[in-house]
Image 1 (tube, rainbow, N blue to C red):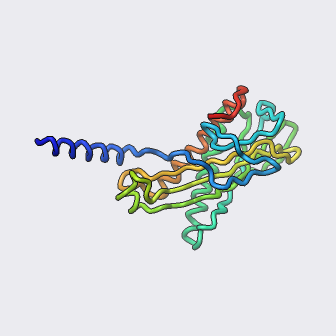
Image 2: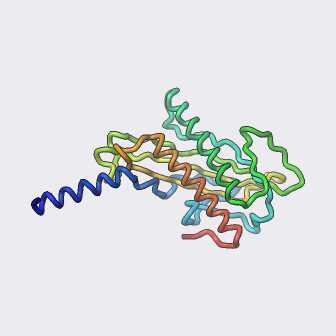
Length: 219
């Protein structure tokens, strides 16, 4: 085998391994984060994207968190197929947030408000609210041919807020954006976006664990 053939073989094996394993959804700078309650996420965090925390907020005080469904506010959802897909992705993110917050061990109770009505009780409680502000399916064909160069990227962003249930005061906001362009045969839109939302939920829980230990947001 010639040197050129060996080089080409190595290149193709590298592309094949990338295609099989994928590069995962990568965190990117959030696009026009919304903020809420006078808080605007502007501090970069290695897990949660951009965050802002209200003065005096102590996560350890709260024993209950109620996770509410996130609407999709991205204006690129144009037809019925887009709306069905958006609803599917919103439902996936909701379930992942519930699952990740449960496994974090931070709360005694995690309420899925799409299944159980939530009424604040005596225990300090938070509501997790937000919206999917970006939901771009990209192009699987473009990802297949030029995904290594960022073509056809799938994009997702969720802007979240934690609200004190008893007072309605916003105590923390985040904005997290993910992009993905590499996968087997370009990777499916659904697969890339589900991975993005799963990563968001996982990393939000990681951030909350750090915050509960007194670690300030940061890179």
